Length: 119
Image (cartoon, rainbow, N blue to C red; front, side, top):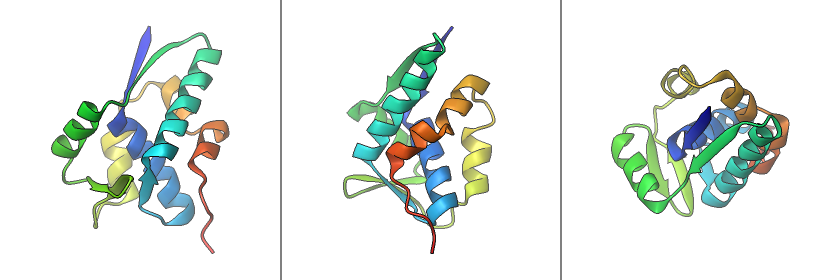
């Protein structure tokens, strides 16, 4: 089996963790790319095949298809006002393969996001 992880899944899951731990509603493209790379490495360690879809075109499509959730911010992706963690979980975690979800919440992947804890 081959897992395909789109930018919308990566961004939503990164923002779930960032919002939960820090209250921040923004992720940089740089951190998102590092997070995606870590997720791919974790899955490949389990001999899983995985394709990460992070092109400019897929990013443009994400902003069009999920304009009610995400907005293009300076060098990153922000959650729109009113979007909550529960909205992201319902929309983006319900259909994920278990191995992919475990990789997305793995501490090795999350460390790429440089989350600063709430004070």
